[in-house]
Length: 346
Image 1: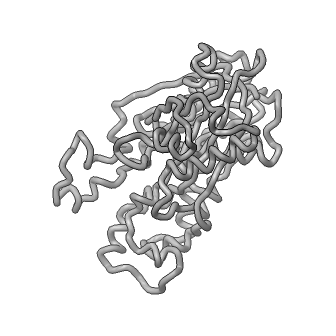
Image 2: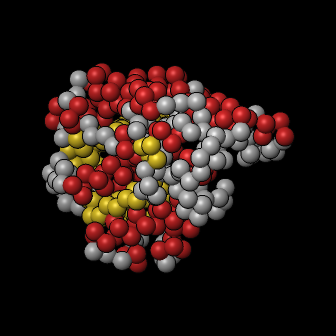
């Protein structure tokens, strides 16, 4: 399999850390020290994942010189879907004007890795000639503040004391996320191209460490008590998630490289999920990788969950860093927990 087109989109203007300090108790230094993030983008109302994903898809198709009708299969990755149902993949096909099969993969921040494996199977069996993998997120919808006009600098002043306290209570996760979409178009390639090896895992025992508790089938009724406790917003045990990432991902990288018969030193680029710069720095340190081979964009766009690797891939393809014949290693961990690594040859 080979990549024939990539595209990405970031909604709106960059939102600096200073803008978040208008609605919660935080500041630029506090955020940068803990995450490495300086700015992120937020989608506006009317810009759900299917809309951002459709625009990223058009750019990927344009780069490949193809039309939407040339796509045989869509894999849509998001943890912030347009609706609880139907899946965003169906809405994306409608936006593109096509009627091919569309699957929604709910493996959160690790979804691109799982999509690689599904894509490889679809192409190898002949079930599809071209597969469009779309990853899109709009976290703006569950940000713990309502004063968007203050965040965007459209109004001076401060939120109410209650709103300030609520946003501050959730700052541990809300400062991390940003919105965006990336699309990658695959087709059958030459011998030696594409997915070489994978090391994937899922362990649901750790699901309570990163989840939205209420509002769906496990807690189907959003009672006044659940709303008051903000159980419809994300919960994240940051320390535990950090531990999982810095222990599990290095092991997956080693296993994937070993299965591919590739030395870690022979990998041209390590494309890691952009969750937190401290996580990726720790992984680099454990694997003794040259940091120059681990590109990062988290400072500019924050954690766009499932979209981080496709956006990074699109940026690297656009600026010429990604070239034919290179060996890549993708790695990610997401809610579930799902995690893994994959070796891929361009």
